[in-house]
Image (cartoon, rainbow, N blue to C red; front, side):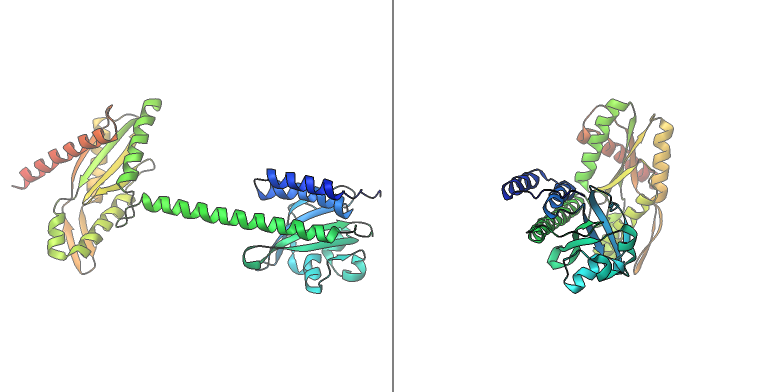
Length: 340
């Protein structure tokens, strides 16, 4: 096998700087580094692994093979049998006599590794994340300065790993903050902001798809009396129970939220908003919001809310919601008349 020429320091620094500048992900950083590592070490296979010590598995994440020795990318092997673990435990970063050092390793024997070098990659708070390795199927010396370069590359990879982990945590935090900003604390449903955004989105979508939007405005009649008689804690529990009841009766394309106080809104998208569709939605919501509610120390037989269901017209979200509110008040007057 012909020896791969060693990179000059100027070429190494220039290529490394370009890799660092262009890398937007761990893979985009590591793959050029493996190519540089091949040229620097003179070994035919270079690869990066990740280690799950709890599961006892080492995974070859990225690999570069330039000759007969083939380290399969994506391969997972038992951690206890790996050369990486033995090298770490013995403090041996390089050997050109793998058989003499670790002849009982099934992984090394199966892959045909004769020369091996590795350095650890550490993640957050110094935890072992993986290894950066170079290997050959023949016995050969390591190029001068190669181990120092491997440690430098491992450090750069560690920084990228921590950077991506931090970015993922920030994304998760931002997603949670966004969710909190769009969620009603008492019921866990969407809040007014989320409702109005969703309603506006559906009104715009309707113009492109030809679907119809139904809006149901729900007002909990008698809620003030529940608060006055049973206390505000019971009132909050009642709101939460209504929220659960509404959520349980939603269909796949329904959207439900608490507008404010004792007011809830349900948005539905249908192919054609006939009177039958509107009536069916009202019946479903009224059934969900009526009945016996257990509120800790209080038990309430609730006769149901006032509900107004409309087919959205050409107005914006505020305009159409106001129309649904008017329909709800018509229902409220009708219910009061029936009760008198």
